Image (cartoon, rainbow, N blue to C red; front, side):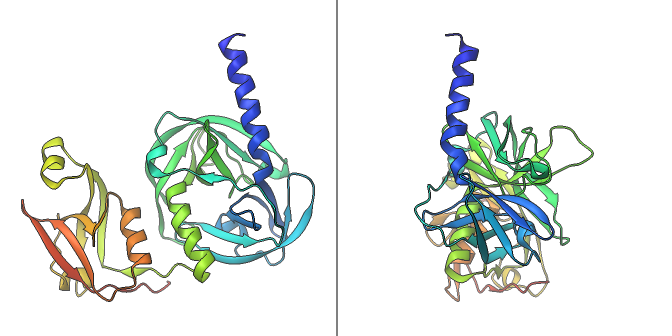
Length: 300
C-alpha cells in the first residue's frame, strides 16, 4: 500500500470515528454546527450560533432530531453550551494546549451552507491570532487554519490526526483564501466548565492591557518558565494600579499556578473566588509578590 493510500484510509477512519460527535444546529435565523461535549447530551458550539435564535433544533449524525436549550453563552470567547436531553452519546475529546502545534494536520467537520456532514482538510497555520469580535471586543488566542470554513461550520470541531478537538471553528475572512479561525480547545475546556456550572462566565477585572510573550532563554532560566504575560498598560484607578503592578511587568503566577498566556490568567481569575489574588511578577529584574483585589467585570 502506498503512503498516499495509507493516509487516505487513516483519514477516512478518523472521520468515521468522530462524525457521530458532530451535530447540526437549526433555528429560525439559519444553521450552525456543534460538538458533543458530554455523554449526557450537552453540546458545545459558538455563542453567535445560538444568540437570539429562539427554539433550537439539534440533529444528530443518525438523523434523530431533538430540541435544544441554551445552558449558557460567553460572547467574549464566542462559546456556548446547549442541553439536548439525549443521553448515551459519544463525546469528543478536547486537546490540551500542549497538544496543539503549528503544522499539525487537522480536519473541520460541520454543516457549511446546510450541506450536512462536510469534511475539509488543512493544517494548524498559526496560534494566538487576534480578530475583532462581533460586539466590538476582540477574540484573542485563536487558532488559524487553512482548512476550508464557511457559514454553517461555526461551532463545529477542528480535529487533529489523533482524534482530539484542537479548536471550535468560529470565523473566516470572506475576502481571503485559506484563512479560518477557531477558539482553542484549552479555552473551550474551562469556559464550558463554567457555563455548565453557572450558566455564565463571571470574569474579574484587573485593569491591564497585556500580551503573551515567549521569553528569551536567559530570562526564561531566571524566572523558571518559558512564557509569561507581559503588561502593556495599566488603567488609572484600577485593581492593578492599586496593587502595585506597572507597565512592562511580567506576570508569572496566580497563587501557586503558572501563568504562561492571557488565557491562563483569565482562567485563574474566573475560578479563584478569593477577594485578594496573589500575583508573582518579574519587575525590574527581580521577582516580586503583589496582592490585587480584582473587581467583577461588567458586561458592556
